[in-house]
Amino acid sequence: MNTMQRPWIVGLTGGIGSGKSTVADGFAALGAYVVDADALSHQLTAPNGLALDAISAAFEGVVTNGVLDRAALRERVFVDAEARKRLEAILHPMIRVATRNALTSNAALAGPYVILMVPLLFESGTYNKRIDCAVVVDVDEATQVERVTRTRGLAADEVKRIVGTQMPRTERLTHAQFVIDNRGSTEALAIQIAALHSVFVVNAGSVVRSLMAPVAQAA
Image 1 (cartoon, helix red, strand yellow):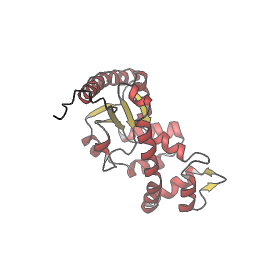
Image 2: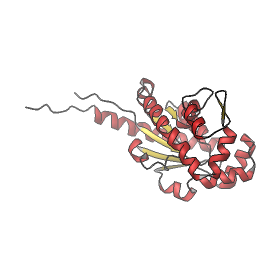
Image 3: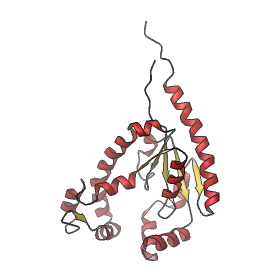
Image 4: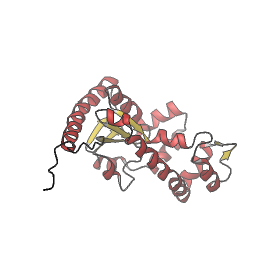
């Protein structure tokens, strides 16, 4: 019998300020295992993180005594597309390795399914090879600006600039199999998460049963 297993993977994405982390926490509370690509990136760029030597070499002056000046680096990459590409060339391969390790961990296999939270999920040309379905957490731009200025202390113009570097909302929605509208109340959000959780559990169970089906032996 073939008992190979893999997690059923739900790609979770949305623009800045859409509430991806809140939604991921909601799925986690229901038993899903969450892999946060953004958190993995922060680990790589934390004090003395694995990516800092390469970042320091590519962006002079943004790393001092093993500590990254995130604001200075953010300013460079948001005004210079080539600089952003250099940063992505450093971080993306490292994030892919860390993500793959997380997705193949015992903890990932133990849950009913995995939520893979990636801010720029659809910007990757290979995203559909890494996930089984995609969920977009959706809000309008005005909500994005209000939330980010309130919770992160960024100026409204800076938030709008960040939004402008991300995939347009209308295009992002065309890639999604499921959409969570996060413009309403906490209660409304919880209802949407619970409904999708039920769908994902059923689909994940179907995949596991298929993978564990008997395989005919060669004569």
